Image (cartoon, rainbow over all chains, first blue to last red; front, side):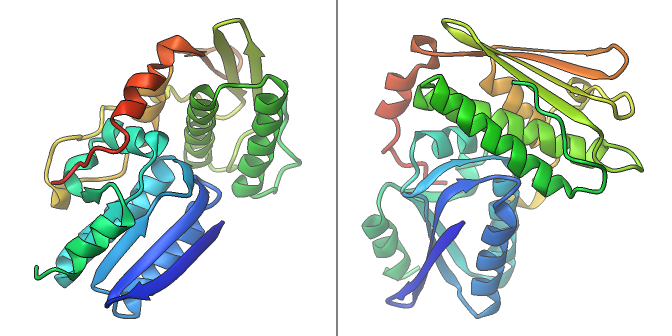
Amino acid sequence: MQIQQATRDGVTVLAPAGRIDTTTSPAVEDAVRGAVDAGARALLVDFTEVEYISSAGLRVFLVLAKRMRDLGGRVVLCGMGQPVRQVFQLAGFLPLFTIDPTREAALDRLTAAP
Amino acid sequence: MPLRRPPPGTPAAATVARVTAAIDAFCARERMPATAAWRLRVALDELLANLGSHGGPAGLPSVEVSLCRESDHIDILVTDDGPPFDPLGSPPPDLTSPLEARQPGGLGIHLVKALVEDIRYEWRDGNRLTLRLRIGAADGTADEDAHADSTGDA
């Protein structure tokens, strides 16, 4: 599992690539937890290169959303292809997250005044 | 495509990875359309993860996955020799409460039910899950693609 990480205008961008499933979700969880532990309070997760996600991956983002809410941080998701979006939808996760179509739109949102 | 688990003591993750590789080979050989392929992968990932958590004190039971491609669907049989466990009997997950109340439990089997056309459980000298996954037009791929770029703001 490859996970690109970058910082742009104070926003931490995580872009996992490939499948987020039982096998790979621990690596995604480590990256997400590492970013928050390092102080990220504006986090963008870009799913453009994600092939699909299973419930093991959903759990990672549920934990992330709860933790960021507790910390007063913000999370935006973007770049969801049909498989990722459909799994979020079936799990009832779409209302739990702010989701933008593109990374640019998500960055604009996160860099704008809250 | 019968696939037996490696010898006892092999970590569950290694077993899942091994099954995943076999599913990839199956999808490539059968030139599986993208939507059917990801649904198959997610469904089997959920079922194997479930086995890992319900396999009893001995850990992951011995599991066998059979895939049979027909013209417009895939027949899937997952058998294991763990303690009797009907995943279809689990209560449905909470899909509507606010973030604080959400729990990840039960989401896996809920996704499987939603992604396949049919799923049945029976106990016959072991747990047997029989699934049917639709291939092709019934995937509704065009419809789903049309919504792929819409936003889902909370």
